Figure 1 (tube, rainbow, N blue to C red):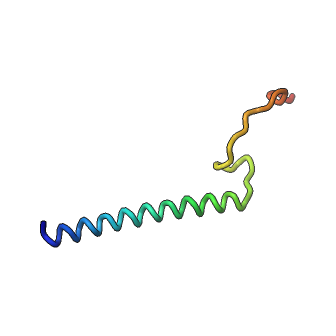
Figure 2: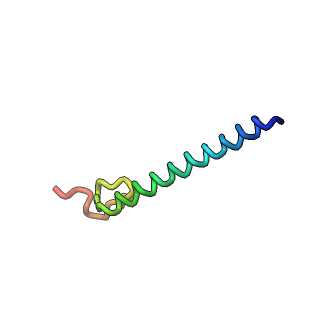
Length: 59
């Protein structure tokens, strides 16, 4: 295996690791901002609670 092949493989691995870390940081930052703003029902990270008895239809 030539030196160029080894360098290419190492650079490829480093780039993939960098992309993975960047994606993870963006995910964490987005979740932190969402939690900070307290969007309530609009929050995509908030778990949806099942309706309790008697509150299905409140007309």
